[in-house]
Amino acid sequence: MALKPTLRDALKESMKKRDGVRTETVRSLLSAIQYLEMEKSVEELSAEESLGVVQREAKKRREEIEFAEKAGRFETITSLERELAIIEEFLPKQLSRAELVDIVTELSAGLGSKNLGELMKLLKERHSGCYDGKMASDVAREVMSL
Image 1: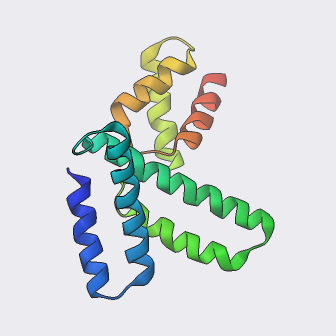
Image 2: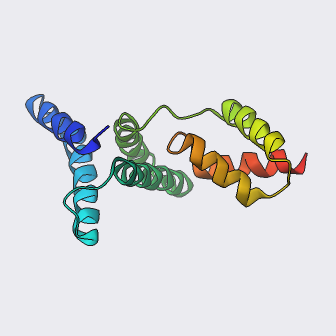
Image 3: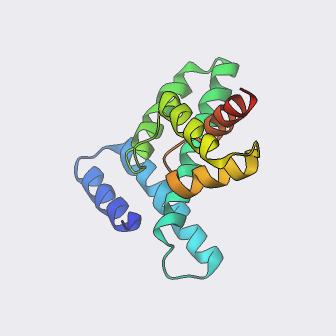
């Protein structure tokens, strides 16, 4: 699935509807993808690389929300949560913690060893882009310690 055309279509649609937040959020995603294309000197990023850019943007928003909560800036949180919701529309369905625990437990049993690196590599190969990395790491550590 090519992400860039999907984002361009979403940008056009949001501009037609005069949805300012959505327009700026989608624009920032396209900009981040184009910046990486220029940095790598390529015409177009692979679908996996584009997805990685969108995931990084989502992660940035989550971190900003966390910092805003700590600082008590609740007016900023609402805006960031809206941006995050828009960004997540372009990501594959994310696994819940319970689903992640089941998958990691199954992979761990099949792996046979207690190597966290191997487990995370296997998880990435099979479910890339479908989970939050920090949560997956936490779950993997919990499962490995059992």
